[in-house]
Every structure is written in C-alpha cells, then in structure tokens.
Length: 163
Ligand SMILES: NC(=O)c1ccc[n+]([C@@H]2O[C@H](COP(=O)([O-])OP(=O)(O)OC[C@H]3O[C@@H](n4cnc5c(N)ncnc54)[C@H](OP(=O)(O)O)[C@@H]3O)[C@@H](O)[C@H]2O)c1
Image 1: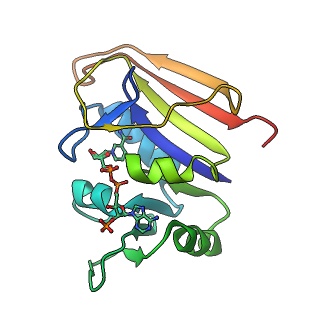
Image 2: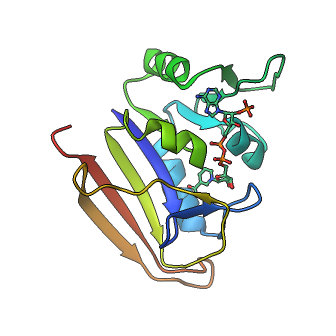
C-alpha cells in the first residue's frame, strides 16, 4: 500500500515560504501515528523545511543534486528509486510531500490520508485536485479547534476507485 499523507486548507493550500501554514499538534500526532515504523518519502525542500530526519522511520529524500549528503537520511535521484527502496523495507510506504512530489505521485498512490484544515490561507504550494472519479472518501473524523489547535479540521481517508 502506497499512502500519501497531507494536511491542506480549503483551497488545497499546503505551504508558504517552505513552511506549513498552521500549528496543529493533533495533526502532528496523527501524522506520527500513521507513519511511525514505515518508510517515508519526501522532496528535498520538505526535508529542509523539517530540518532533520524524523525518528523511527526510514527517511528517503528525493533530490537531483549531486554530492549532497545529510546524516540520517537516504538520498535518491528519482521517485521510482525512492519507491523501490521503500518497498524493500516495508509493504506500507508513505509519501509525505511536498507539492512537487505529490504532483508526481498521485498516480502511484493507493490511498490518501488528508487532514482538511478549515481555513483559507495565503500559500505558494498546493496539493493537486482530488478527482472524485478516481478517489472515494471512505472515512472522516472531525475535530473542533481548541486552545492548542488553531483551526477546526477533519481527518479524511480516500481510496482509489477500482484501485
Ligand atoms: N501541509 C502538508 O501536509 C505538507 C507536507 C509536506 C510539505 N509541505 C510544504 O510544501 C512545501 C514544499 O513543497 P515543494 O513542492 O516546494 O517541494 P518538495 O516537493 O518538498 O521538494 C521538491 C524537490 O524535490 C526534488 N525532486 C522532486 N521531484 C523529483 C524527482 N522526480 N527526482 C528527483 N528529485 C526530485 C527536487 O530537489 P532538488 O532541487 O534538490 O533537486 C525538488 O526541488 C513547503 O512549504 C512545505 O512546508 C506541506
């Protein structure tokens, strides 16, 4: 199973200035629960935005740069290679962004784990449109904002139709 994990606003916005657009500890915990123990694949910009390897997961970073090395991550030159390595480690792999990598992986993904944040924010990076001819929402759990989580949001699971 290849799963894309994303948190996006109501206009599919996901980032600005190489940062996330919100602070939602409940979503960070959800992300950790989903991905811990499994390989994660990300673009070089997302890795730099996080700033370190995430613990308890094999971090696979795609980049076309030559002679770029970082402690604690596996760097590969293509998405195909990233998926090949990840699948050697575990059948369940997670693609965690960003926008550029999502665009290239919607076709190979079997499932989307979306956090839909009930906000409309200025952004420079977006998630691709979720085509309802291709994707069917199979689960949804919503949470209201509180003192620590600044917006209402819903965890949604989408499965590929006939996938
Ligand atoms: N809300 C969310 O769930 C979420 C999740 C993740 C990220 N984000 C946000 O998204 C933004 C970053 O996304 P982004 O679209 O700018 O960048 P990105 O997808 O994280 O990284 C793009 C980089 O990945 C490498 N890359 C992409 N495709 C490749 C391929 N086929 N082969 C080899 N290398 C490839 C290239 O690195 P090189 O330039 O090194 O060659 C490219 O510049 C940030 O704002 C971040 O906070 C949000």
